[in-house]
Length: 468
Image (cartoon, rainbow, N blue to C red; front, side):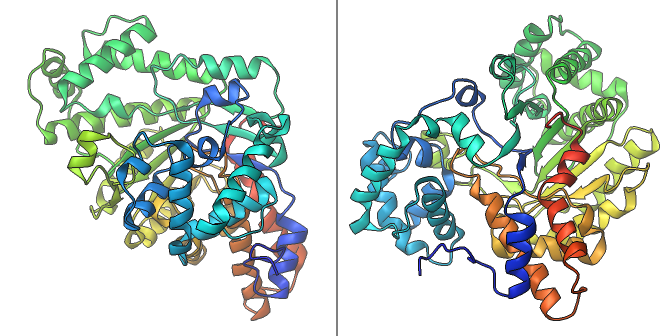
């Protein structure tokens, strides 16, 4: 039997029925990813397996380094095929790492390749996959159609002109592409040189002279309005924890003036300024009915040598261990009290926070919106079978799993759509085990209906995107 077979990860008869009858054929709404919008708009044709599979994949670089691979074969200027062969040499050492499952699921789903990837099979797999990539159906639009992707939500800086989104949507595509507003650079006040350079970009993009804090907020609102006009309905924030040390507007204006003039800003002052700006963007999200996302708890760029020589997002980030509960509570309470709490999804990077996040969202449900506050799918270091099961168990035990908005790829790769299948198989296996043990009813319409909703319908209804 092939390693990736029809019943992969489905350990019981109920799990198999749930997956094949209720999950497998559902479309995909990939509401958070880092795919390059230009690749979608250009209908990019990938020249080889390196371009579509290894280019920019920090998960693979991290594993390759652990296997003793030289950096030139990870992020360096080695030949693409040489990098692929180094990855193939690493794959057999990834047993019990989710990379082993993802690798073979992706080879099977994209190319029909069932042979296990290793040094001896690498050459033939390289040639086979590259030949298939030359087919018109393996361009980005064909891939999106193959995996029944209804919509993509990319991750975009407020200063982005969204030209690629506009060009793609002008063609009335089968798969929609919408921007997500990620204003992280607006908060990075302590590095005044970089913050001022970005603020100048914001001024140009919004056609606003930004010489006061009020003008800064007005420029953010203009860009928020622009994203909304392009169909954007999501915001996103990547930070260690939610900033909630609020200060007065006059104090925030004073910090703005100091930073704009190039004066030093302490980390504490940066956090206070960020709290006020984050509160303001939350109010903008609520006014427009957007969904706000928080990706919390990553400790980034730990390897200073590699960061300085190669840059960020290269596989040198880990789980952080900051306290989360009190700042989450202060921030949400303030927004809620002011009538500006939007739909919100929280993703944690450290499993110790599972029940903190799962119980915190229960404090702010309501407003007639099913599942208004969401505990998001396992993210980054938790984006694997055990991590996703822990997230589902914490959510089930403290809230309503039936209202969960499900999976996303959070990926830079067009080879990552089988992660939705991976999640669906894991979900069905978990619920199928419950059915086999009599812990949930032996009622396929009840349980299968919930599975179907989690796979697609919940996200479609919750995010209010034009997808059908």
